[in-house]
Length: 152
Image (cartoon, rainbow, N blue to C red; front, top):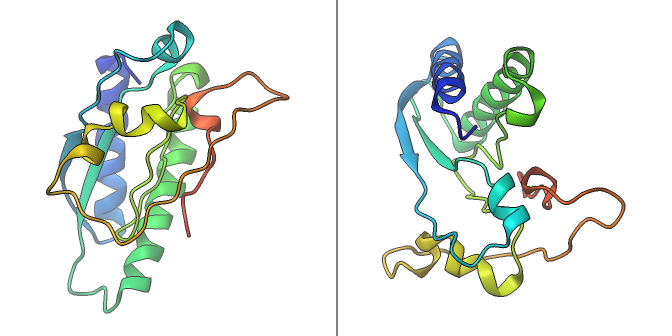
């Protein structure tokens, strides 16, 4: 949520879920964005975009086990947060993975790398990038309804 008073308890909840799954919460990073090219509807509905860092502990013997723990953390946090926070200001996890980073938005194809400044950073490397470009036609467009490429 954009509202810090709603966001902070949710972020604490997520850190607690990490610990309950035997993982170590390392911190949050506010994802750098440039929203100057957004239209009014996209800007008004834009979420506060954060990136979560969780340490893979030695008891996770392989990446698949770690991914499963992250999945459980996400599902448990989503379920509990849905009870605590109004739906119109809810938390939304575009992804929670050690393998993929998902960037979502009410953006045109041309706006993605302008909006997400990480994508223009020369130190930012990837083996592959996928982009899905289609606005919802039977529902009102929203950030969380952008294609859910959470797990590939």
